Image 1 (cartoon, rainbow, N blue to C red):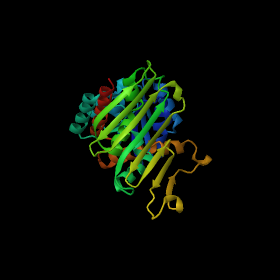
Image 2 (cartoon, helix red, strand yellow; image 1 turned 30 degrees about the vertical axis):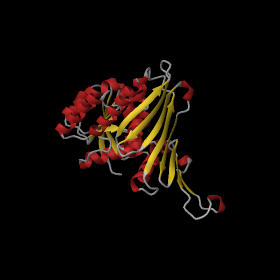
Image 3 (cartoon, rainbow, N blue to C red; image 1 turned 90 degrees about the horizontal axis):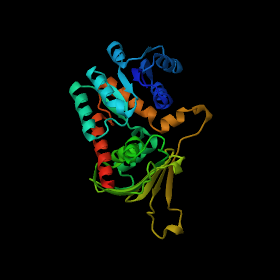
Image 4 (cartoon, helix red, strand yellow; image 1 turned 45 degrees about the horizontal axis):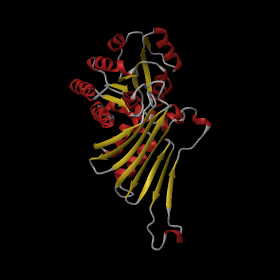
Length: 330
């Protein structure tokens, strides 16, 4: 990993817990931080060992600082004007999801970035999580034959920050929505049911993708799920693979020998897991969840002028799929 100079807008809990340390681990040099409070900006720089400059006005930071890219981690309702200002300043920019609250807003930002010739990347870190990258590899390479169907689950207590179905889908479950596009392509048919109770969200979805893959999704944003949980199981022609809780991928090759399967040791399962060590500190989680990978990808795109895998243009389709799911649930 090589160094890139990044400036930050925002230093809240998510930025400080996940994005700042992941950027540093990926090789970034933090040149400046802008928040609404100068002391808070100074504190963020001090916490992460940076000699960069603090700002209480991001407009001044964009005007004065030279950097390879700007990282924006702000409240969802603030992000659209922030990103437009970064684009107008000619800066490559990474922004935490969601970028735009719906398809038309996302399209406006994608168009603006392309017209300005700047990199615009959206923070869908699950695309860069090792377990899902390995699952994508299985689908693409066809080691187990063609993918036919899937089952996905995502459950979390979203009640502190999501007060209705749309907020749950676009602030929490959106990562899985985008992951399904990353794994399977574009959905062409959606149906679903809900059994909600105010901010307690429970959804069951069925999707069919353009390539014929079909599957079911269970989403829950309920206080019952104080222990966040997720999994994706894909059935292929010749086996299945299950990505479980970010940390394990189990791959089953179906029985291919002559005779009955219980007559010999012909079944084959491969399990991929990370090692566990006290030496990893908190970085193990940042790697496994994809945060370090996405920061490394953003820096590479900035330096080489590449289009990010989770670009602003690609984000339009994720936001449109969120809107389509909400329509199917109504």
